[in-house]
Amino acid sequence: MSNSSGSSTLAIIGGGNMGAALAGGLLASGFVSPANLVIVEVIAARREQLAAMFPGVTISPLITPCGSAVVAVKPPDVPAASQSAVTAGAGRVLSIAAGVTIKTLEAACGTGVAVIRAMPNTPSLVGEGASAIAGGAHATEVDIEWAEAVLGSVGLVVRVPESQLDVVTGLAGSGPAYLFLVAEALMDAGVAAGLPRATAETLVRQLFVGSAKLLAQGEAPADLRASVTSPGGTTAAGVSVLETEAVRAAFIQAVKAATDRSRELGNR
Image 1: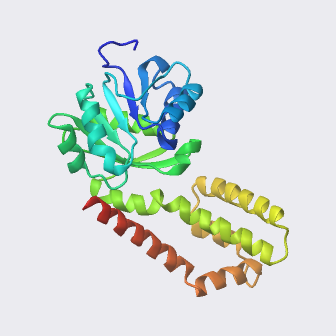
Image 2: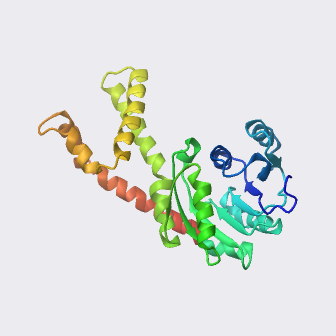
Image 3: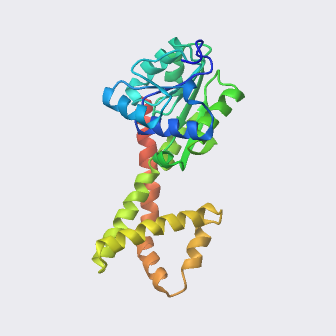
């Protein structure tokens, strides 16, 4: 390690897809240098992949001295990983595991360690994530800003009270799956109506890209929808079916169900 004290070293514990995405974002943004980043990964084959992906970064099966840590392991493994980070010198710990509460994190880390709980989503893998964070009792404004910078390297970050993180999980965390299901259904619908599958898939992929860009400009979704929907036209006919079939209500119930499940996981 270039820094023997570990004080300026950031450890990412867990080298899976999300851990690797964060490493890539942090390196690309200049938030951390390769010499001051450690990725802890227990699977040897994955360590080889990570070493090829991130030259100059320490890839280790065991945690080494560090000043801060991002815990990106499966929820059941979070307490042990957090404890190991603190033992290695981490004064702040950011967890991106669904359903692992601040109370659980603070119990694992011990008194005086700044704990931040976050909920990112899979578009973070392409630098377009939507994450929410909440700080624990010992997390200062500086700690929260640090967590914002870490997750901000792969997308947008909002601050919420921890009580709202389960809703964020049900909406933004699970949300990509809802949209992918819609994309899948539209592709199938195009084929059913007579298009070759390749054509339907190409059109739907671009449909999502273009629509997302329009939405990102800030105009209200209802206004964007209205601008496409001429009275008595083709879009009006299609939207009428969606409303009759209670698609809007189904999405509301889906977010509620996912939120409730997140709460159940956190209360285990």
